[in-house]
Length: 195
Image 1 (cartoon, rainbow, N blue to C red):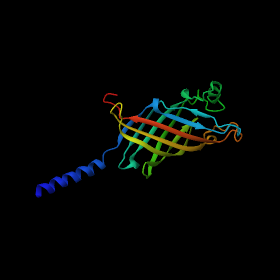
Image 2: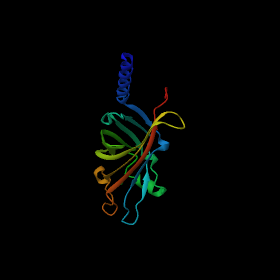
Image 3: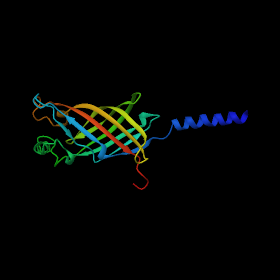
Image 4: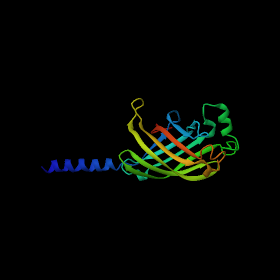
């Protein structure tokens, strides 16, 4: 009977320890990441552009989400509206001024669980040399071994809004909307040893 109690106690302790596992660091996959932003064009259409990422890291603590972090780098060289002339214009001085400010970055300052698979991610977004806080509503899509690679992986979607004029990108406001809608989908994996 005493042996049985020891086995049960060891099992409970093991379960408690696994629930408090250390945060896991994931390298985001640019090939499976889209960072989309959309706006109103004089009220007639709502164009969408994809900027993607060059690299990104998510540190996710499933047991204590407040210990999680997100950091990404988005080069304007990846900007794609599917209209080459618009890509060129957006990179010019009256918008992103990509020659002077070639990269957009995001670094989280807090991650809050909203229950279930939903999280509020607050962070500093730097665009056009200006850093402002933004809030993303994130949904965890999946976490676990990837069926193709076997690597521990994670995937999530996120959305949010911002005012482009806050970042010194106010050309044609309000005819071209100041509000920008963000839609993000991404996945990543734990890097293999040596990567």
